[in-house]
Length: 437
Image (cartoon, rainbow, N blue to C red; front, side, top):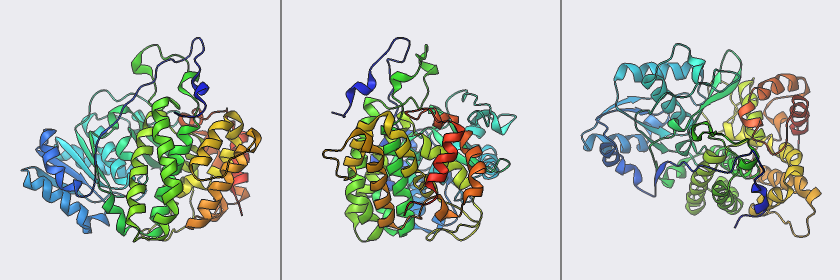
């Protein structure tokens, strides 16, 4: 039983119903070899297989492609996915998808690959005159996806984004120099094939970044505004996908946080620790299921401008091309600052989350919750080589106004926080996140 069950107390005029939406999932070693049978079962005959320039040379793509061909499925490969997708790269993928006349999609890669495949499927299936029509408001029009998409089998190769379990796709909007996205239940893949063995060859820094993305998914979802504090939707179709913390999402969050507390540092620092990397992939799945039904909040909202405004930061373990801040890294550098700020809204939840991660919380007072969470996060960051806050990825005090402007545009995320967040609050959170040790 989750702690603080009164968190979901219902008041008049507010939501009393929460929804559970989940991808079908097959998890385990060797599951990628089943891709062909699943594709046939979903009615696929001509498939667009999405991956990136690095993964195309690794065995996982070949394994999936061979399984599809063995099942009699025609396969066309798109291997031009960017590590950090942009509106331009999404448009190129969508053009490929539209011209190919595909009846199914398969993605083999990390969140960038899966997200690009989602977007290509969307824009090829339901073309629109303006690319921003489906993009989250206020940056885009936030129009609903008109109907079902083609079936999509997602095969994640990193233990972090959870994109295989969500209806969210994220990209850099180059004209605004900010990350944004599209959110719709219709974007959720039809099936996720999750083989934990794909993580065994990942570099240390990639495991750290993706692992902290998992951690923040779980901790943000667990501390999100409860679904019962939203005004009643009136109609089921109007209920948001990011509906807030709920009893279903709590289960995945708590289980994921406990696994992270036990295995994150091990998985990052020892590639031969297959048990730890297997458990990290399972934690990513649990957290993906959870936040796909509850939504994340401020650390992710702040992350989009940290990634979007990057100047010259080059992380180890990633392809050397243009500067980038990997997604999980751009999230976690904000997190200690944010959880100090949000703890007063639900201290019991912050303390319980910290305890799941392994923090000592006996005799802790509610007013200590923020510091306890922050100290545990900082300890894990230091143990896994994460940069020292927002300053560690190249920002300074002069960048705060620009960072704030980008984060303020992420209202879908900010309004899911357990307490209100103003522009002035965001600026202070960035200043507090510049340096932790």
